[in-house]
Every structure is written in structure tokens, then in C-alpha cells.
Image (cartoon, rainbow over all chains, first blue to last red):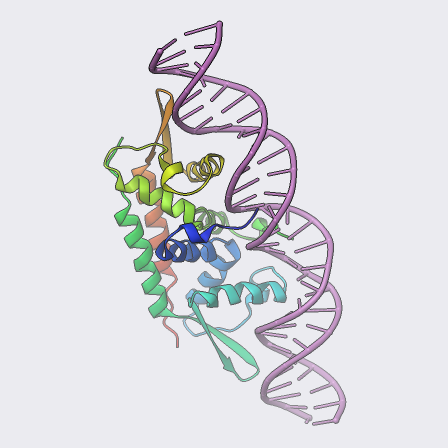
Length: 107
Length: 107
DNA sequence: GTTGTATATTGCAATATTACGATGATAAAT
DNA sequence: ATTTATCATCGTAATATTGCAATATACAAC
């Protein structure tokens, strides 16, 4: 069916899965790494850096924005995408909590 | 197209994205949480616990096994699924490395 | 205003994912 | 041996995702 039965899970489970899902594409990983490696806040050479069409990159950026991981500011005629560090740390904490709380001691 | 252009990304980027992707479904989050909360290694009451059909649960378990996060042992006529703690920690480390290495200091 | 540049959105085709019923396979219990 | 219980796998329908060309939007420079 392709549809996820979100209603049978808790909000926390759905949110957590959503973070993971957005990060679950190599283009989005690559975009974050590229932006993260720039000391200054670099705009979109992304299209050249990563080998995907402009429309596709724009779509991936939108998804990263949807969970608050990126913030984009208009800078003249171009856009400046930066990592939202607060949100970044927040999400990292959520993921670590999940990992730490889910360790089992069986087997 | 629905197909991901894996070939233009590094193996590390693809692997990382794959981890995230597998964790990016609330059913799989719920499965891991449930198994993690059992002190003993509980099998598939999962079907009762989570409200999905047996075939669907089985499919999700397969994906979790595919990245080594779960190991399953046959126990009589039932299966015993456990978290592979070593792998679990390994993946947590990978994800944290990604998060720590990608923090930018702009804006 | 027109042109050029940078990004977003729309529409679409190809492929992937999710979910489930039906069917198999295996092993315990009778 | 037959039944029952527990999973796995197959086939299939519904929906989601990925990627791109085409188009739209916004703004600066001329």
C-alpha cells in the first residue's frame, strides 16, 4: 500500500522515525556534510558539488528544512543555507536517547 | 523515478543513509523499543503489541536484520529476536560521528 | 522594462515501500 | 500421522519517493 499506519504509533515514535527518514537518503547526507564542512555559510554550489539536477537538490533541501535541520536566508539573489545548530543538537540528543534507552541485555 | 542514484555518492554516505532509512519507519522504531524493553528476549508478541499483520512485521524484522541490528534465533517453534548490541553500539557511533563532524559554525 | 541568474514549484515517469492475504515450511503437541 | 502454532515468503494493490524537464518566481544589473 505504500501508506504508513502512523495512527497506531505514538507521536514520539512517528517523530523519531521522521528524523531518521529525512536523513535516510545519501543526497541529503551529502548536502549536510557539504554545508557542514564550509566554515562560512555557503549557498548552492550544491548543484555542482553533488551530481543532481537543480530541481532535485531543491526538493532535498526542502525536506531537510521540514524537520528544521536547515535554515535558509536570502542573500541578494542567492540563498544561503545553514545548519540550524540548535535543532541539530536537539535531534542528535533525541537519537542518542533512543539508542541508549533501547539497549537490551538478553542473549 | 523512485530510484536513488547511489553511484554518485561515497560508500560511507550510502551506508549512513541506509542506517537512517531502515530506522525511518515508526513500526521499526516501535519494534526496537519493544524488544529493548524486554529483559528477556521476547519473540513475536510483536504482532499483538504493534497493530500490524504478521506478514508485515516479518518484513520489518527482515529489514532490521539486513543492517545487522537484530539477530534471530530459532527457539522451538518460535523465533527469538534480539538486539545485536555490538552492532547497535557501532551504528550509534557512526551516527554520532556524522553529527559531530557536520556541525558548522556559520550564521 | 528587459535580460540574466538563482532558486522554487509543478507535472510526470520510473521505481520503491508499505501492508496484507494466501501459501509454505517447520516443529511441538496430540 | 494429524493437527496446531509460529514464522517466512510470494504475489499484489495502494501509495510514496526520486529525479528531471519545464515553468514560475524573485531580484539584480543593465
